[in-house]
Length: 257
Image (cartoon, rainbow, N blue to C red; front, top):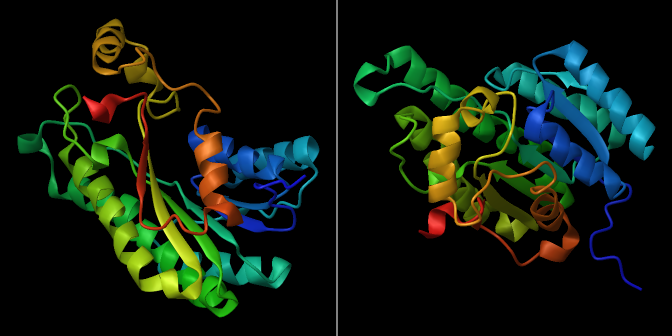
């Protein structure tokens, strides 16, 4: 019987992997036998994640501290990964931030920070991984994590820099998909809806937001832990070889109404 989603022996770099959705997606890949390179800015958190992944899934894990806005740190992640494993099959660009304030009050610094992390950081990781690993190997799976807010606006949580950056990620993915498809590299975007993470917890737990979400989301609830797993595994696997340049909302139907 064929296992369409077997990732044994493959290597995935997962950014923003110190908690939340990054860890969930790393676990989903590790469950399929993939070795994981978790990266984030807090090494102590990465060590905890690495220990969990090794003990629960028995895969190889190489945690590396990295600020994705620093080009030299990004290049070093790729260098260390290639020295250890000799390959990078999958890149999950998950690291991000979010400035919430009325557009008229957003500062230049807030807007610039959003772009540097969510958009430029995503590009820096993709560029380094493609150049040094995936293009030479003529194979790769890049999954950029945007947001449903990269596809639509919103009236409940003003965050124009986030909309701009995540919309940029969606179309950056299309641009890279068009360029790198000839190398056997696919580039796709996942656009999550409201999921519980350390960044969203305070907002999602308020009664006013819960009431709003119930009316705005057709399935009438937030996303649960693990509900990004299947999309992540599918886009990371050899089975998705003809899926390229897509943006897949995983949002309970928020963007369909």
